[in-house]
Length: 326
Image (cartoon, rainbow, N blue to C red; front, side, top):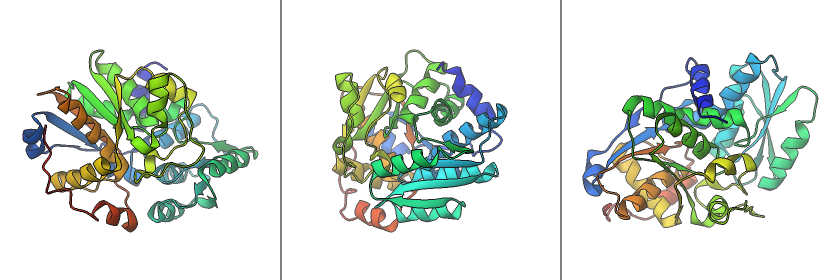
């Protein structure tokens, strides 16, 4: 795809979604000697960036007179909510297959948006069941990242930030299946050929980083055990790998670092930040420590959906006593 698909998605979505705020912490900027801008997707519909890709896909189908009767998806959380919400906006039914062990809050929200929820034993089983269900006449499979319209929609978060702030030296986003980072890369290239784009991923769920480093897609057999539930994907797709392969770098983030930045971002920005959303800041911190000082940095905070169990894990130990430093 060419980057202008993100601009087209933005025009399509503008009447339907929230233009999320850009947040800053002057204290954090002083700590790290940088000018960091946070695009806060926790304020988006369904509490995450996923609403952008799901609705853009359905709106584009409507433009082409290809609307289905039912939307089918598989997801561990935020994409599930997004598809259920988007389908409801379009007057469609939805069936979402969710792997066991997923966030109870996200499952409950998906049901509240009107979806029929099916619980599968594993992530792979969820994907298989959804694909089988989508073969029913009138059904459309809306994947979490492996679709051009999903990628274009996710990229509108970064596009808005570029519109608002005009210039960044580097852009950071979390990576699960790669839809957000792919869209972020495309959006950035609309505005700058020089700005660096980096992905951040849990070290224990590093299928995308392995793929980036080896040039060959790596896929897990079992769901990675990371607190960042939005990055528990088994593997990226050929479509997202095309964009991931063009990134300027990939940062692997430890579970301790995820917890550290989850606490600090909530403390400094006074908003809810789910663990996956903290990945980008963890990557930006590493980049700054490598000697990139006094830079303008965009960090995509991907979502804010936390259940009580995850919240308790985040705050089980104090990380605020250790100040962010170079």
